[in-house]
Length: 415
Image (cartoon, rainbow, N blue to C red; front, side):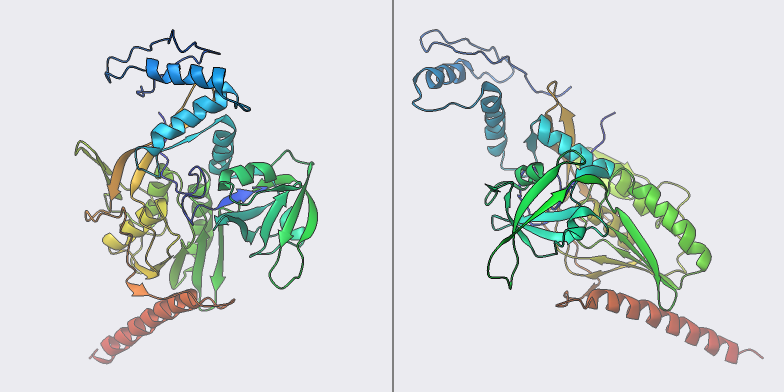
């Protein structure tokens, strides 16, 4: 059974600011053979009784271009892919997308949690490829790259105004091979060049630590295939330490696999449903909580950190936690991606991702285009100071003081 993928991160191109990539880091589809050349006078019709459209016009135009165009014509396969993308663009849905075989391979690598490249998280902003984060201990960090650096060229090829995926494909490559980057850094007069040897990169899906005051902090970066197991490992170490509260950081998390979102939410919520999925026909599917969650104890306060780049699977988890009263949301309004994409792998290895449904929180709240408004709104601070995390810590410690006070008052009333 094909997995449902609800990630904003793997969209074709930089359609959304949140669509960061790690670099270093049936179906009613009619597959029609592509002829080499078709004379305009003798078009080859393709019967399409289900649509009533005469595709002979398409082949007629195809043949004229091959025969008459003054200039270099892209390969037939590339033109076929462009035609598919043209049809998709007419739908007006930025989440229904087509990935050619190479792009599909990159997207599948992201979901597995590892790839071969330089070890940096990048985003396309205003036509420029910006490094969002360098992964600790990986080639990008060792080469001196920093958050905020702008990559201008890859192996002397300018990448301005490329799609995010096109740029990522240039930077990624087999382990042990070099890639030369031309980088602009604010404060320097001239761009500089750096050559990096690609390595096998393990995506830092999750990290955790105990903060002062015995507060557990868990940072989940995406909902890939290993995210649920990584979370369980962290909770198995955290819960025996009897934390006074847990902070789940979903800021900047663009989503991932629907099944993983349900598993992650179920570690904190033991009530159903986790989410409601509705198709265009109005059919509903309820996703139940998976039994055996490790952090469902309501006596351990839970704060979920969110921001404008928390999307899709992040919103599913955040919505379930709040609707079932397990915890609160703190930070900034989430992105608002509440649609579900189902991937269909075509026979040449390319992938068609189709929006098939929309999802709602357990209380029936629609997320698509709206997002989740935090219970406690806190704007991100400037510089290295993390005011949102500080507020979360203050909230949990405040609850702890209130509970201690209540216990003492009860004790004072004992005869």
